[in-house]
Length: 112
Image 1 (cartoon, one colour):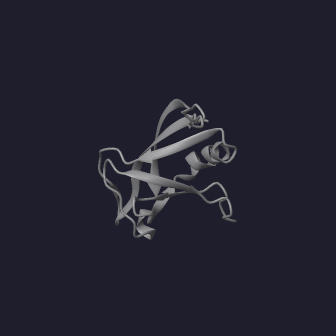
Image 2 (spheres, rainbow, N blue to C red; image 1 turned 135 degrees about the horizontal axis):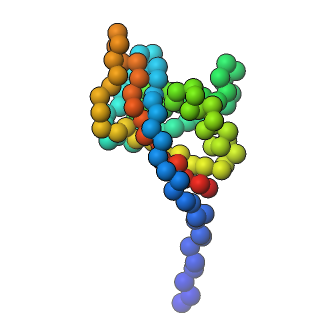
């Protein structure tokens, strides 16, 4: 019997980690905890800020957005397929004002 070859996955290269923030936590019900992996979703259809990257917890609840400065240069790289990005919450505490408004976020960037 002849075995079938599995399709080859594209080779990716790990470029590094970027530490940024999830902002707008006070507007969304989703929460995250240190060590949790998060989902990152692009929102290119947003007419006010087409470079937005939404952050969702493991239950796909919106927790906030990657800060505008980071998403402004990262979104075009994601959209073009040049990079793939994964995120997780590093150890640390939520930054608080009148309520949590931001949370540290680590992004692992892979060259596609």
